[in-house]
Image (cartoon, rainbow, N blue to C red):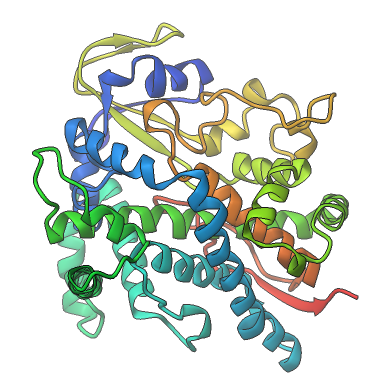
Length: 431
């Protein structure tokens, strides 16, 4: 429906309609001008908001990077290394000092360090930094500004008044400059290393050998946009998914106990496995996958999404769509619909993902669109799952986590689904 200053939009939670938009009639639905307007300051022309040939060449190049060998070796090694750092600098320190930790903040530091290292080849050391990390703060502020531009047609006026009455706060332009400076310095350094014959293996270095849709070498701006798009995909969504997973485990001790049994049976002593072995073991952990899938069902990392119709259309349920309409769907609302998920739709029930034969259930992309779907299905789906399950397994084996009483755990309205006030937990060693 229309809203003051915002484009006309039609919303649905019908799995048939969602699959039709994402897959069946994919070519008719693109990101559209409003998405580009809201996110251009942060995402530029990266894979998230690109369409047509600009999207296609990025997708093709990226698909060669996200392959099994990289998952098994480099990615797994990075995740395990950063988990060990997180345990020593945050969780063990919490036990020694008998102080609670903000689990949500710890997860963001873990995924930020992991993806800055995988994306730029730089160790940001967010896990061992006391206080705020400037890059992370600017990244978060820039994302929130994207959401504000989506929902507030008067954002320019709002920001003008904010700068007048709160002049000590950094402007959005200054936050974007912080991000750009970081990316520019790393790109310059990487080019010097490649010129010396060094062979870094981060995403940035791999894209430096690629060509754009016009067959030309990628500019500094194009490289910046590409890598920042993958960082927002890998850092935020996985950190939030891990936070909501442990929140639900704290509320459902039966699920936690069952999951811990599988982890102990499958992994045993995690120090005895190399990256390849750990990768293969994680793939067999059916209940862990079910817990993760159920968390993403109820707390999807992208709670709402939209596309733009290029031509008139009619959805499977008979809804007419006009050229120029925006169409939206909400995985968050869909997960709570009894018409879609049955009478226990709002309940946390990982067993819904296990078939009678004990295998992991597969749902259609329209029913469970948490990793998008169709030709634009998330390239990092397996990577995010691998990272999350390794973190879940290692943390559950090592620690007991209990929620501090009296806190309200809820989400913050954003492009993604962060916890509004974090999540304070007490940490103790498992015997």
